Image (cartoon, rainbow, N blue to C red; front, side):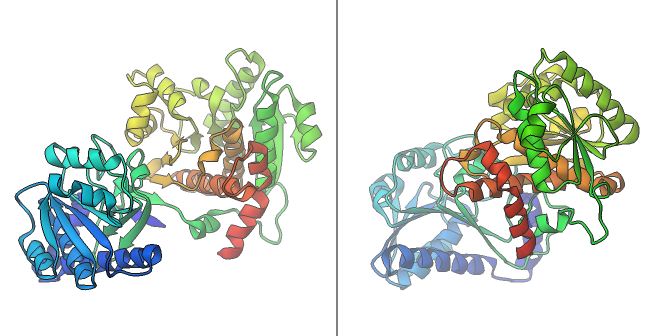
Length: 490
């Protein structure tokens, strides 16, 4: 699991080490130089003779970059540091000059940077607030038009919201971000996460206190969460999932959500709706009609004029409230959500749906507002409804009980396709049904299961057609092999 910590938590953990004389900057700079040297060898076959540009601001990130530049210059790289402020890290600047590097003004060195083999972005550190301004902003805007080489961000891409993932101004998107001590929330949160590239965390030996801000599950975490049946299992102990989805107008949603649930390994799927004949024709394992369930999927393919499906959802919500059955609330069911539910109910909106839900509850936000500050609005939806909120997007965010926040980024962009959300709903419903008893004991578990479903959904899309277009049905069909591979690797 990748954990991230706020800038204040990281600085607090650094203070006792700095007071004790631990050379944190030396460690960070050496690790940064080592990674850049590896990139240069991979790209050029050598470090000597490579052109390295460093974008230097007044803070400690500039110092890290300058010392790293000195290491690279001693190995034969031609290094120029572009300064955007008269204030630079004195010892770092002296080390770079002593190693044969040069410091130049930003306007003088911009063309060099655009043509360099590697550009190190050390303009701002984690203590900065707000976006880039003045000379730094002008430089980044100029370089954003095109840089020939690789861009490596030092700790974070300069100008992102370090703790909230905001993009208040121009940012030079990185191919790799080398962050020190711990990942910072903004590296995992959209929209800033799109500027991070490959993320590398350098361990500085920090003793981080308090709860982490954001978590990202890995494959081993998901394997540990998955409801693997014991030897004495039967279909009822493995979980029964009720699905209220689809209609004659949108029958595919019912087929996709039930198919995903069956292939994800739930014990039984009960379908309630008007297209049971189509569902059973494609998934004969599904049982049609009412009966006891451990969890529900509500809403895929249910439109405002589907009176019969809406009545079924409203009736099923009684069990959610009275018996504590877990539920996935998607698409057409979001507007039927009761005033307040518990975290065992997982909402799965995209940004537009979340904006509509929030608007009906007195908030003033549109889709663009949600996309600009997704964590803020997902948290607000959790506060207003009590539900766990899974906000779908290029990076999926999950906000749940006990301040749990997850950020998953496994999905390829090809997964932005019709029906993908129906598959995710069925997959997540299977997980909730399989872990229903555990969710009763620990409501925050619903958020971890939602994050696990997002990871598996993305992995299945890759497996269905690596690197190319993928249809929602293909993602569902890829679920058994995807899950088996995760469990085998663990």
